[in-house]
Image 1 (cartoon, rainbow, N blue to C red):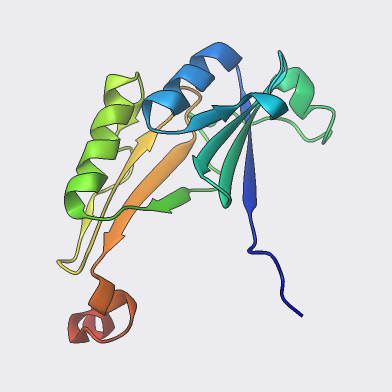
Image 2 (image 1 turned 135 degrees about the horizontal axis):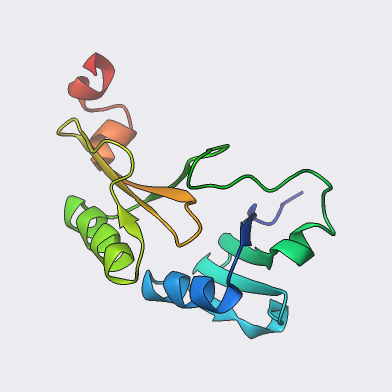
Length: 147
């Protein structure tokens, strides 16, 4: 019995849907208009696998009665996405900063075989961008075990 690959839908509360949509488009996500209206926007980060649902606070409240924390002052999650190279890590953070995001809200991680930086979206949600040497990822690289 075969199963379809798993997909993830990250739901984020946002204060200004249009601003957030433009920000995510600027960092490479594509809007899926079939799942977008005046209360929510589906942003495709990786076709068929990673989607970010941007939800107005009113829409968010239809899913949970829990309070929406201010992501600029509190953090519940750190979202992390892989990149194909060190240069791609830097390029994505640069795009985020150019689009109005905050660069490097968490420390840069540089272990040689692994490199990561981060950015905040307009609402303060932290996205980490990480590259790992393919040999280290497969366990073939001895430095991965030493770090």
